[in-house]
Structures are given as C-alpha cells and as structure tokens.
Image 1: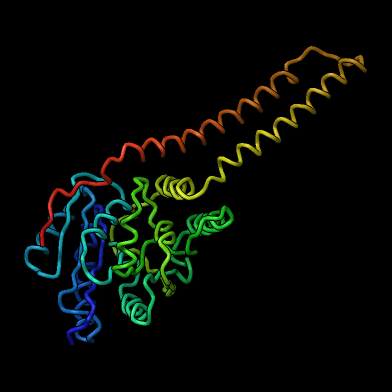
Image 2 (image 1 turned 90 degrees about the vertical axis):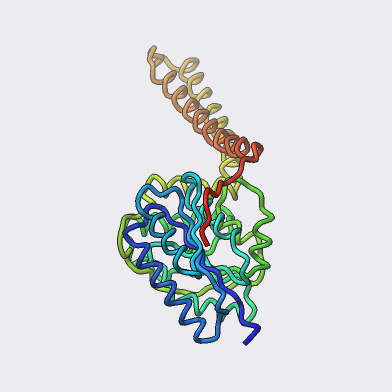
Length: 315
C-alpha cells in the first residue's frame, strides 16, 4: 500500500544506559510488527534524544543509529530537562504521526497500535492514561492524585493521570510549534492546541532497570512549573489573603483598644505586638515569593533564549 502513514516514536533519555538497549529492542520489534500488519510505512523511525547524559547512554544510541537505519540519535549540548529534550525530539521529526514515550519501558509500547487505530478513525491527539497507580509508592500515588485534582480545581485543563505518553498528528504538532514559551509544560500546552482527542487506558509497569529521574524535589518543581504556567489563581489568592488580613487587623486593633480603654487588664507584653507582626510579615513574605516566581517566569520568557542546542544528530 502506498498510502500507509509514517510513524515517529520520540524517546527522551537521561542516564538510561541500564535500560536503553531493552527499549531499543522493544520499539524496533514494535515497528516491525506494525509494518508487517500494514499499519505504518517502512520509513517509520525511532528518535532518541540524549539530554546530556553522564553515563554510556549516548554511546549506545550513537552505535545503534550508525548501524540501524530506523534509529536517529540526537545529542543535546547539555542537560536541559525532560520537557525540553522531548520537545527537541518532537520538532526534529517530519513523519505523519508522532508518539512520545519515556525510555524506562513503564509505558506500554504495545498501546501505540491502539493509538494508531484511534488516529485512523479521526483523532489528532491520543492520550495514554494510566488506569491505576498500583505500581507507585503510597506517597507518590497520593501526591500525584492530589496534584491532578488541585490543577483541575484551579481551572487548568489537564488529562487526569496522563503524563507524556501520547500520539499527535502532524497537524497537531505543527500547531504546538506555534507556542513560543520557554517554560515548557507540554501536558498543558497540548491541551491548549485543541484538535479532536481521545484517551486510551493502560496499566503502567514497574521500571525495567535504572533509577527514576523524578525524585520528590523534581516532582515538586515540575508541579509548580505547570501550576504557574497555566494559572494566575495564586496571584489572585494574594489579593484575597490581603483582604482577609486587613479585616483581621481591624479586629485586632479593636480588641487592643477595647482592653486599653475599658478594662484595667492592660499588661505591657510582647504578645499583642509580636503576633500581629509575625502574622502580617509572613503574609508579606509569602506574597512576595509568589509574585517573584511569576516575575522570574516573565524574565525567562522575555530573554527569548533557545530552549536547547543540538550538538550532534546521527541518522
């Protein structure tokens, strides 16, 4: 058939030497299966993006790209983070359909065939959504679920329990390229793009090898990145907090004056002075911190620095 679609699978990698060979084999087998089933063309490709790894990840990828025509290895000049590495891979493709998947094999590669079926019936974006979080620790499971609920409560349009395992048509990806912001949060940006979309569910597996690249500190940073990129609710909350604090200060003033004018219980002490100072001082510092985070994002945006630099590409 001459009208078969071409597929690109984009895999961001950071210190994945322990698992990358398994990932290569699994995805190559998948391409072979899909090609034999006449669901994709034979010129479909795998794009692996090395995000400044410190281990043997690049050596493995460059060797694979040199010997295997279906593999393209892209090396960033330095570590730029998962979202930038993923975006670098996405914009390097020219195939009809692009699927992004992590290198740890926790997302089920076999689900890509189902995603392609959904694309064939007219969906431009297909989200891989976890049906459960049984493979997560208790703390990670609870924090992730609360995070998605919080984002929805703040009015941020996210797909519940979806990370970065998704299919995008060429039209949807071209639309995504029109968003120029430096502070990338692709889960939110893809929803902004629109286009007809659907979800497919899967059970997420345990990591095959290596260690997670998202410890608690990075998870919290990523969560704040998404929140501050797509919601101004924290800024508006400062206004509400200031309004509430001003009314509380009025009551404190009335209370102090009442004691001073109508009772004999006036005892010189630090409580009536120190407590209001601590209360309002903490509100001011919190407010300045939140405002500062948004100003920092504006600062990063207006500089218009490149998101990444590609040091080397091996086809």
